[in-house]
Image (cartoon, rainbow, N blue to C red; front, top):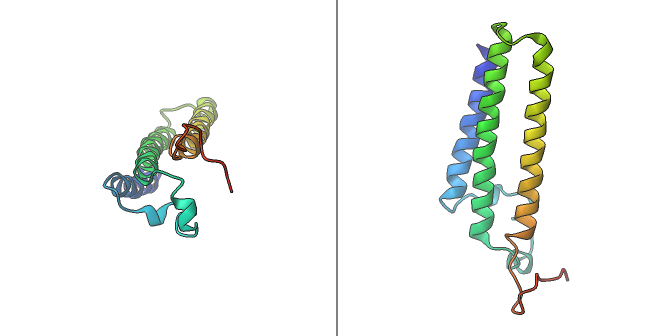
Length: 123
């Protein structure tokens, strides 16, 4: 029972956070956004950044539900122990791929372009 409750609660938390980001609020939950200077904030599209964080939160919800399903199948001994590590590594790989994709998207596609079409350089 606990195997589905913990991932389910975390999935509900990420779902609420994703909805908050999608509605255009919650930029205070993005790491580094509050501590950055106003000049640094002007380098990024706020709405694109919030939308990308919402998509990552929804991806995390799906990942957590997959983890919960895997744990329930393991506890009920439907999933053999030999396959448990395989699925654990598959889920870990998916999480890392999603995290890397989010970091690349947020740092490349959410950055504002200069007037000549190139990406602004760091000061």
